Structure formats: structure tokens, C-alpha cells
Image (tube, rainbow, N blue to C red):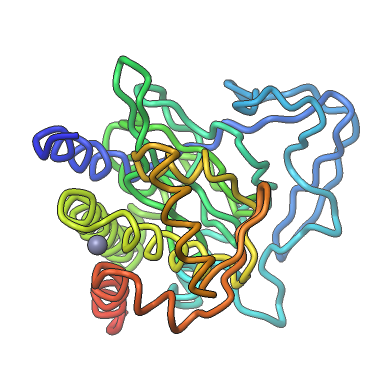
Length: 307
Ligand SMILES: [Zn+2]
């Protein structure tokens, strides 16, 4: 991949900060709509979202979760999403009535490039990959978003059109807000708009770092960086992940990932089996990673230190 192509990807990622939620559910699914103030279960609801099929057409996947999965903000605890945590009480009260807890189902295509957004997401856990694709079919991840992120915030305030694809990589839950409500809150609160702008800056910095990393750093360091980011978002040492998916996210051949994973396993840094990678030695993995992981984290921390 040439650098000029990556530049296009970075531009797309920057413009795409934005991932509407095009959910998926069966006709027999129980929906839990939940906020701190009210909770409602709807049985047998007909799907109301477009593009509702997960990428793998998994018929058993559900959207959203049940009452036990509800992680919406409670009166006793902070919101599960770090961006929501940064809102003061008044701004959070503006947004909270519009938040709906949803389930992020693995491999669900949340949005497709060129499609209109319907939701902005504040992930609680799980991860969403922002990917861009060439007409020949090649795909690469330009950012991994999770609980420290907003999915779709920037684009929701712009033209409301996704410039890249968004796919659930690791399952979890998120708070979703529809675009009109999101815009209403943004229009009402300078602090909320400032948060969105800072987040978009953080996302741009992340994409820029990925541009540099993909062009200049070896696959081993990039793989370590990718695993560290996934761990940060999941708090798990074990990641359900195939090498094929990893290779696709990194934009390298599967053989290259296999060779590097084998070396890391032989060094006792990770272990892998079919469909699963476990981080054994976190410190060694950090040492294997390039500087990009720490650089992006530092930039993110600086952007939000005063917010
Ligand atoms: Zn790097």
C-alpha cells in the first residue's frame, strides 16, 4: 500500500468519525430501552433499523440486549462511556433521556460508507472498527473505537453521512442517541460541542499515527500495538480473534501475521490458538510495540485533561 493511498484513508477516517447505528434484531427479540429515568420492554417488535444484517448474516444475533445487559447510567454510578463521564451534570441531563442501551453484536455492520447516519454511539465495552475499503475488496482498519470514544459524533454534526464502514469487532454494549436529539443537545451546550470537537481531534491524531505506523513500522510492532489497544478497550488479556481478521485489520497478509504471532508466542509474550489470542507478558508486549501506542494515548490524555 502506498502512502498516498493511506492519506486517503486518513482523510476518510477523519471525515467519518461517525458511525450511525443500523441495528439488527429478530422479530421475536425483546428490546430493552433504558435510561436512568425509565425502562421499557417491547416484545416482538418489527425491525425498525435499516441495514440490519450482521456482516455474516448471523441469524441468532440480537439487537439490543435484555434487561440484564442494561448498563445504562444509574443514579449510583458513573456512565460506562468515558466521554459521557466528562459531561457535567447539566449537560448529561440534556442527553440522558435520549440514550438507549443497545447490544453490539460481533461482525454487525453498523454503518456503510456513503450511508446516512441514524445514531451516535457511546460504547460501554466492546470495540468498533472503522475500516475503509478499495473497490478491489481490500480493507484496512483506520481506527479502533470503544469506551473512550464516540462513534459518529463528528459526522452527525456535519452532513450526517458516513465516509467509512463501521463494524463490531468485539461484542459489547453502547448507549445510542438518534441524530436529531444529538444535534439538539449539541446546539444547546457549548461544553458538549467542545467535547465532540476534542474527540474528533483525538480521532484524527489516532488516524494520523496509524498512517505513520503502517508506512514505517514492522508488522511485529504494529501487531503488538494493535493488541495493546484492544486490551485497553476490553480489559481482557484474552481476545477472541482469528489471525485472518487481525491480518485484515492491519492490512497485511495472513502469513505475515502468522509468522509474527509465532515469534511472539515462542518468546512467551502471547499465546494463540484457533480463534483466540492471549496476552501472557504485558510488559514485553509493550516493549515490542512501537512508540505509536503510547503517543496516541498521551495525545488523548492531553486533549481531555482539562475537560
Ligand atoms: Zn507504530
